[in-house]
Image (cartoon, rainbow, N blue to C red):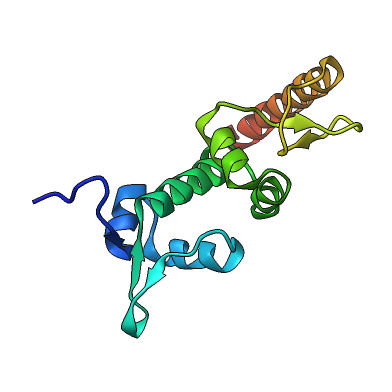
Length: 137
């Protein structure tokens, strides 16, 4: 019998639902203070629905959006959980700093940053083509 959407999840259930190993969830707890499941006697973790939503957002940012751990920490520090969840859902995008670097705190790409990213992509594609050629030898 499946649990309801508001039921608490064990770490194994949370890991299965998120497609991430249990040890990764434990690791994220050490890196992100905002991840704090309930713990019962003996240290057994129980994840509330909002914990699962936060874990899903962290997983999306790290695995799908290319954020680093420090980037997710900065995103949370600068905008809180609401902002972190919005960026993970795609409701808000990453920003660009004054130097043109991607900044995970929000905003759109400037034209200059878009050009720099396009040039970088071209460089990476050229490198890949050279590597592919070397591997075919």
